[in-house]
Image (cartoon, rainbow, N blue to C red; front, side, top):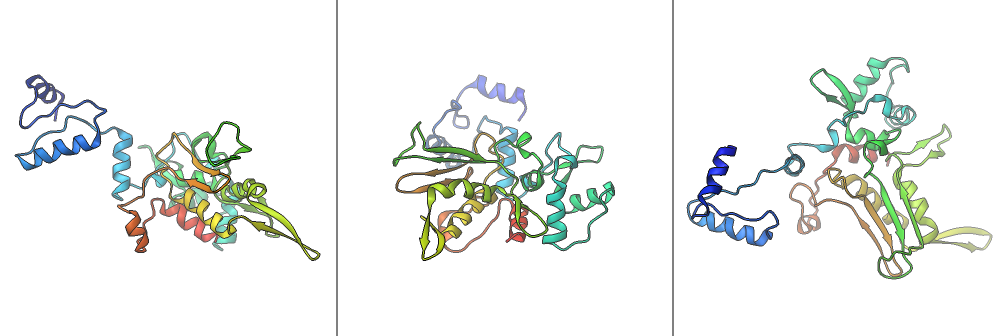
Length: 285
C-alpha cells in the first residue's frame, strides 16, 4: 500500500472494510476487529512494522538468526585472541593459523560465524554471538548483554538491597596452561557474586565444605539457559537475577522462540534461538 492509498483510506473514513484505531489499542479489541474482517470479506490494518519488529518476526519464524548478524563498527580487533586460541586449539583441538596470518584468522572466524559479512565492500565485522562469546569488550557494542544481580532482605524488590552488582564478562572463560581459570566467563562471574549470599562454608571434621541453598548445578543451568536463550534484540533490558528471603528468580528477556510454549516444553520439544551460543557453550561443557 502506498502513502497516497493510505491517505485516501483515512480520508474516506471507516466502512465494512476499514477500521481506524489508535496505536495504543488493546490487543483483544484489535483481534475482535480482525475476526470481524475475516468473517466478512476481508479488510486492511493501517500500520507498518518497524525494523526491529520485522527482525523479531523473522527471527521468531527461524528465517533470520540475529546472533549471526554483523555488529556495525566492530572488527576482528574487538575479539580476545587468547580466548579464541583456547577455544580452537584446546577445546576443539584444531590447528590454528599463525599469529601474523591475518587472512587465515579472518577465514577461520568467518567460517565459524564469529565474524560476519558487513557491507557491500566485502568487509567483515564481529557477529553478535562472536562478541558475546569472545569480545575483548562487548559492553561497548552490546551494553545490555549482562547479568544484573540483586539480593533483597525481604520477599519483594526494594530500593535498599543487601547487594547489587553486574556480571559483564564474555560468555566463555579463559584458562592458563594448568587449566586454572584466569578470567571467568559471565556465568562463573555471576556464580562468584552469588556465592556469599546463597551458600555457607561448613566444617566437617577437619575438612571445610560449602553448602549451597540450591543445588549448584541447577543454579549454573539456570544461568546458562538465561544467557544462551535470551532475545538479544531486546536492547533495553538485561538478564535479572533476584535473590529474596524465600526464593530466587532468574528473568531472561524475550518470549520463547520458534512457537515454543510451556506445553511443548513439558513434552520435550527443543528449539534454540541462538544456536551458535548453544553450540560453543556446549563445547565447553
